[in-house]
Length: 327
Image (cartoon, rainbow, N blue to C red; front, side):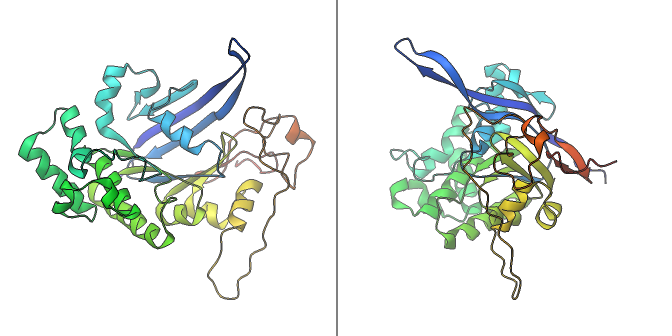
C-alpha cells in the first residue's frame, strides 16, 4: 500500500484582527493571532497542534474551516481551495468538515432537545427527516456512548462529559472526513478526559476520521496524535512525528514545554526548563525569531532574522537558527 494521501494542506495562513481606537474607530494596528502557518495532514491521521494559551491554536482551527475569514494564505481540503471558495460551495463542503468545541456547556442550545441539536444538520443539508433522521441520531448517539432515551432530554440534564459526547455526536452526524477537535477535553474533569480521548480514538477507527486535535496539554496530545505541530505566537516552530518530537525535541521552546510534562517512570527525574519573561503581545511581536526574547540560547541573528521552518530530520521540521538543516 502507498502512503496515505494528504487531506489538508495549509500554506502561509494568516489571521489578523484590527485594533481600533478613537472616535472614528480608526485601525491603529493588528493582533497577529495566526501569522504564517504551514502544515499538512494525511488522510486518517490525527495531527496535534499544541502551545500555550493565546498562541493562536483555536483561531487557526476556525480559520481553516472558514468560521473566521483568513487574512492571507491558502487552505486546501482534498486539493480544493477553501480560502477562496464561494460560500454556497463552501456550505456544501461543510458536510465533510466539522468541529468539536471546547466548552460542552455553551456549544449546545439549551432550548433544543438532544435529538433536535444533533439532527438539525441532517435537515439543513437535505439528507434526512422524520423517522430516518431519528434512526440516524439514535445510531450516532449509541456510537458516542449514550442511549436512545437521551434523544428527548435537554442539555442541562447531562453532565459535562455527557454533553461533550453529544457535541461529538453532532459533529459525526453528517459522516465527515475531517474534524477539528478544539480543546475537546480541557473543560472536563481529569477522570472524564481519558474516556473522551478513548472514545475519539474508537470513532476515528470506525469512521475513518482525520483529526486536527488542538490542545495545550502535551500528555493528551501524545496519547491521540500521530504528528505534532508546536505553535508559538501565531507560528509553527516545530513539526514532527509524535515519537521524534517527544523523544528528541529540537526547538528550545518545544524542549521547555516537554520538560514540564510529568513522568511516571520510577527513578527518572526531569530537569525542568524555566523560561524567562512573558509571552510577547501578538499585536507587537518581536523582530526576527519571535521566541528570542525568552530563549536561553539566543544569539545576535535570532533578533535580526526570522528563521525558516526547515527540514532537520525525517519528516521533522524546526524553525531555529541553532538547529542544523538536514542535508
